[in-house]
Length: 257
Length: 281
Image 1: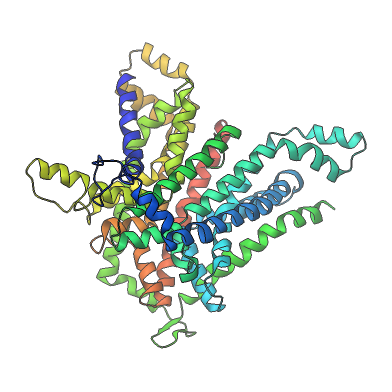
Image 2: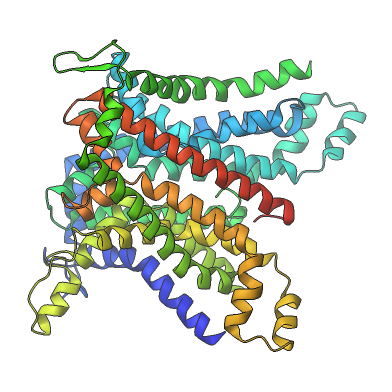
């Protein structure tokens, strides 16, 4: 068992190596991408926060899109989960399968299909197009997480509320909804992250006006830029790690995956 | 009453799925049998030419690279994922939460960032080459080969293997392992005769998931393989955005779609079988 644990530690090291390296080189005072960094400086963070293109990609596109997707996907997916778990009796398996289809389709094909679809409809590749694409990725996560939360809530609680005079809507709103709050919040967090981290759809759909942070990092890598991308990446890693820590604290992390 | 309520609850989601998934995918299927026109991109004349193009040696080569990279990545994920899944599944301490967090966090970070990390490690002036230079060895091109792409994809997709595998191993009672040990099984026999057969559903579902995501990779081969290792995803990207041969791009997309959907349907089946045996995750 000791050998296995040592092996597991090594595998973890392999899994985390690229992230740790990116974080390390973001503090390199030179532009040499060296490890371990020869010194410590926040130079590339200053460069990140003073770069207009990075700021635009981060705040005006990525953050805006991810927040919009998070809210919309949680509402749309949450309603669907209630319908699937609580109301639907006939055709439930079919509907469940339909709501999980976006995961079955490779992301780059969603991206390519949306690109052709938007150009056919002469819709310019804007932030809205990106939101629609990311909704496809996020809704299945939300449906799964909220369904798992709903399954864990005893139905007799709602029935008790109704026998005490509450209407069906009131019983749901006052009894069930507070009980699935943590799964709803985790779902919102997952939806945010899925949108914020996406590259495969954004690579096709994002136009010059809607370059997301990952797309900008991608093009900077292609053009061999300086370690500002390391600073940008470190900030993304920290944001995602913090959100996941919150989600894990509230709900089981493995449910959505 | 129930029917109408269910429809009301499901309809916003269904509207999104129809408008942005089903219709665009149907459009791709239709364009894939249309004729390419250099001036108008495509004209609605039915043809099988786009699919015929696949049999050109170059495209067959790209398809073969894609299949090969997919298989090697799946194998590497299984070899690295099994010991990790076993340790996690048998872990009882409070460290489990932290370990799961460290497993899921890389998965949720954008793949571009993780590939960027690999470029810093394996690049021409990267960490490995710097260490080799310090030892008196000249710079090597560690990127732009199948191995580099497989390393990148393995690191990206490893959690997809570990999670179902872990769920599967958790379902094996420890008593079964102890019984095998008491009956004189050595660690290899224990793995081969007890653990592997009982955790096979998890291994199969993890493999199918990893394979289906690996064969549609785009960013990893683009950044780590360059011109030397091209996969079907790179072809789709170039044909859509650079060559503007949409009918051909659509036909590659359809082939990739049929391929992955077949693999994913098998995946969902094994997952369902897994959750019937005992609570999945």
